[in-house]
Length: 276
Image 1: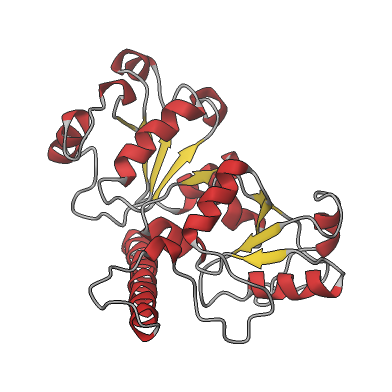
Image 2: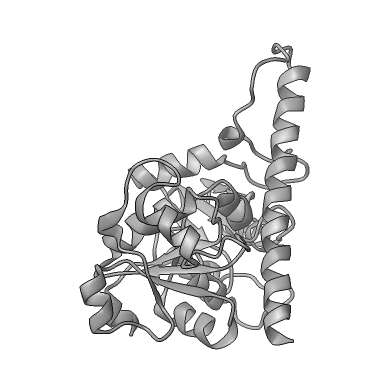
């Protein structure tokens, strides 16, 4: 019963992310047409943002967040509780301690923590949380404005849309331990070569050597892993955790897997010995 519950939860979460992405795409297309663009002009979902509504701070698109992360032009904060961050976060994001005395339902990060990380109240700050219906980033942005911060923006599409668009998340040791204990449907994938894997790996891990990757979809070891069951083709919502000899190796394989429509893929940034 617990396994079925975990599978239903994973499927529901993934479906919510994909549905959100579809809605954003439709909204982007509608705006393009209403703005006088040619109806045949294809909107770019990576540049979409949610309608402004009553937002207290500006929003950024997925493409803008990518650029910010690459150039390190702002500090990106994950406004969720630590364990959610540890299980799955946008690579390069920073987590914060909870504001003292807050409830789980109305969780908010501690503004004082941000003051110890950024350089001045005009420093560029980006916040994200669990997507369009999550209030954590909104609550934190309001408190930051009240505290005098002047350059705060949100990626309100959040983790669900980030993953739905095919991007990776990163897992921390505490998150990996949590997944091992609580999500019996999760699949751990070892990116090292077969010889290293056979010499010792995590219990139950599956081996897909990153060194055997080939360019293009459904090629090389990825195709083999789909056919022999190392990749769960019957349920692309399955949580996949990729680790390897180092973070770069794990990330390389995780990126290849994510491009095969396994959108719930995270990589571990340390060595496999760290994870063990």
